[in-house]
Image (cartoon, rainbow, N blue to C red):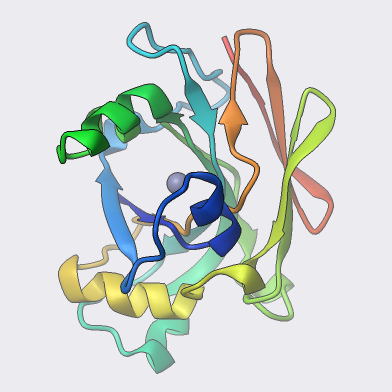
Amino acid sequence: MKIICVGRNYTDHIKELDNSKPKNPVLFLKPDSAIILKNKPFFIPDFSQDIHYELEITVKISRIGKHIQQKFSHKYYDFIGLGVDFTARDLQADLKSKGLPWEKSKAFDGSCFISEWTEKSKFDNIDNINFNLVKNGKTVQDSNSKLMLWKIDELISYISRYFTLKIGDVIFTGTPAGVGKVSIGDNLEGFIERDKIFDLKIK
Ligand code: ZN
């Protein structure tokens, strides 16, 4: 399986990183080796002094598809979850400044946390889901899927123009504002509609 990530999908996050608003979705991939194994913590890697959390709504692909029309996108997923796109921000800034690919800062081992899944049918409207991240007891990211520049069904259609979607692939739909650093000993908790979906330790 593969993990397809969307960058710059919330205006407030684009502003906080001083990036410009893209004309099309920004896409990048993480390999399956980036996934944190079940019940394991996130280990801060030795090559970065500035690892950031990015809480994102995730979508699990349930059907193979290419060139999916937006009106059919909803047939390609049944589950929604949360993910943390861990990013070595110092390394990413260096790579970006040199015009180099981001992979070392975004796709390293452990850079991808994927929560348990919730059935899509539990939500009235996929484009109106509240989600938030609590770090050490304090809310640090709090947003709603309605604030995405490109909504889930638009993303699936767009992504499938470039990458065949396969069963089990996971899409990270981008992070809202409030990204920040993690340190050893931190605890992250993710919520959808105020229900706790995950608990993750930083080591
Ligand atoms: Zn991200």
